Length: 127
Image 1: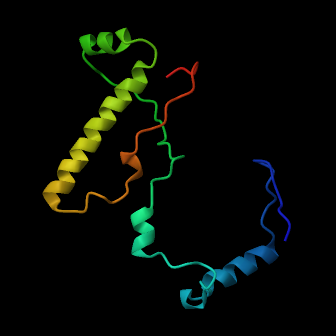
Image 2: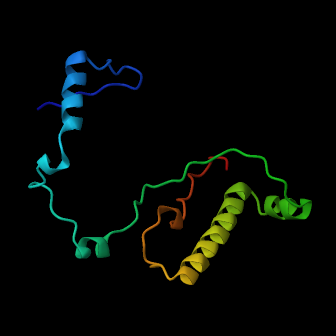
């Protein structure tokens, strides 16, 4: 089987023949799926699992009202003040989650992509 590559926006429409094939596949029960070439996911697998190193939360532009002295302090730290503000808010969020998990008795070791800090930006890229 050869690899077919398309550029974004150039993907051809799904043909009627392909629609029929996809519809037939969705109607098949899960019991007919052949998992023989996929190794089972054991407890050992999950014990060695790590969060995706390429995960980056989506950024959302918003307007926030903060005290003037806090803004002056953040900006006085130099370039990247928004990134530092985000890091401080993320740490507060994660601490709140840890407290909630501990009080509910849930497993703290469950992997949560949001618990991983976001990677540093390249030099020269505005925050």
